[in-house]
Length: 73
Image 1 (cartoon, rainbow, N blue to C red):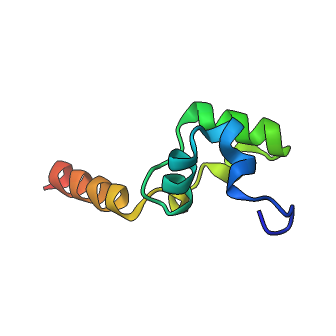
Image 2: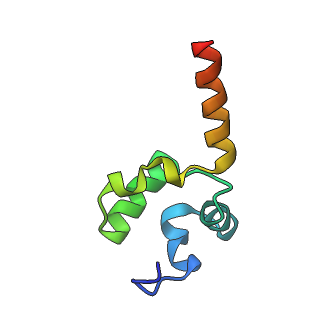
């Protein structure tokens, strides 16, 4: 965002409401596939850049780790 001089409001057409943009940027909400598609197209980015474990909120990563641990006993 800094490189492109974007403000959170610039992401609203691709992510949704101001609140949703805030949640995504603060990592309280993960990007959905439609959001990723719109961001990739709107910002001329490869989608795989947006699809990384690091974009997931910490609470979701913890939940995924617990699920894996439960499956592997």
